[in-house]
Amino acid sequence: MQGQALKLPHGRHVTRAALAFLIIALSCLVSGNMGRGQAASPAIVVSTTKAVPLQLITINGSGFGAKETVHFYWNGSLLPSDITADGNGNFSKAQMHVPSKTASGYSTLQAAGAASGLRVSRTIQIPPPAVTVTPSNLGSRRSFDITISGFGANEVVGLYWDKKDQILTGTTNDFGGMGRSGVAVPASASVGYHVLRVLGGLSLRAVDITLNVGAASGNPAPTATKATAPPPATSVPPTAVPPAATNTPITAVGGAMSSGTYHFTGSLVASAGAQVSHVDGILLLKVGPDCSLAGTMLRQSSGAMLPIAGSGAHGLTLAFDADGLHLNGASTAVSANRVSGLFTNGSGGTMGFWVATLITPNQVDTRYAFTASISSGPDAGMAYRGTLELYGDTYGGLVGFLTLDSGSEYRVTGNSVNGNVNMSVVVRAGTPFFATGTEVGGNLRGSVYGPLSGDQGTWTATR
Image (cartoon, rainbow, N blue to C red; front, side, top):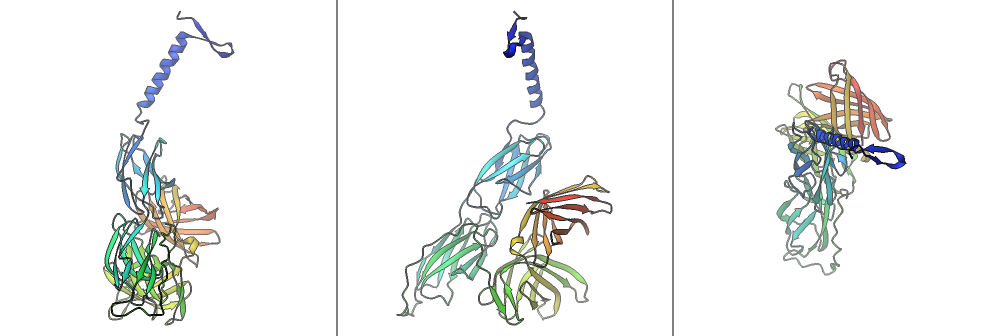
């Protein structure tokens, strides 16, 4: 019976003994593969299933390849938050921030093993922004209380009266919430219905609330004025843009300054004239109808967000704190795309100089997946991988930040002219590598030199 043959299609035969041997061989093969440290079903545990933009999330995982790199993706886009699994394919305390422009609804967080190809996903709920104002029918009151939720975590939020005049700024907590009591109604507010816009500075999340202002106590409403029915309250979608830019003349310097994003750089000098430090980053400038500067902040290469106060009524002035110093900057020259000035101290003495150059709208916060590998030289075999964030100004200058998968962040400077790109990135103390290349179909690629003498390789930056 053991030698009896089984008839297969096309007239072919196989003995039962051969069939048994084949089954045993397949069993051994499956058993051997299962014993190589790769689980069939990887798993991740996320610190929360509900989050707001910019919120920090912690991830623990298991079942990946031993000592392999695990990548994280948000709605299919690679995040700069890799981690290496241990010898058992596990990892803990991987961290990521929810991308700032994430829309309300449900998003997908995915962990993927770089070598094994194992993948696992979790769904994160993103609540819509919400604003509560008490009371909304103010009557003769000249202030109100406000509570917001669902905005970006730890972001600067502005309140705009009739969608244009900023009356308050504040910073949300780790979960995108904030509350304020006694928010003053502008003294110039007329009797009737007004729209209060709440706008997140980074997430660009916005909500409009209608308020009904009555006559101030002791001042009856003018008989010629009659309040109309309130406009419907609306929620501006998360992709809404800030209030429209204005070209408000700054008469003291004779030019025009507009709201927008600027590349800001400055140098502070000691009394003897020696350079002591730099102040640089991205300046978010909003110019009000009365030449006031509102909702402005500076992102330094350190990643800090610095609130900036200012005025444009009598020449452009900026004031902020950096490196333990309180800086006052007064403009000395201004054009449609660039403004420059001096840092001064309390007694009016000059401490340094600065310049701010407008970033073109289509070059604001352009993000790329960046890779660079050194193929020859002392650093042969070294690779850099992460997220490249670039801002291109109206004079062809480039400024930005390279955040490696390790979490290290480096300042990027350079220029882009007619599709040719040059960048310098200081990845070691005082030692940069230089990337030169071209733009092809919106992506960048080329050659890299340094950081050590003789180092050469290639790089790509893909949207």
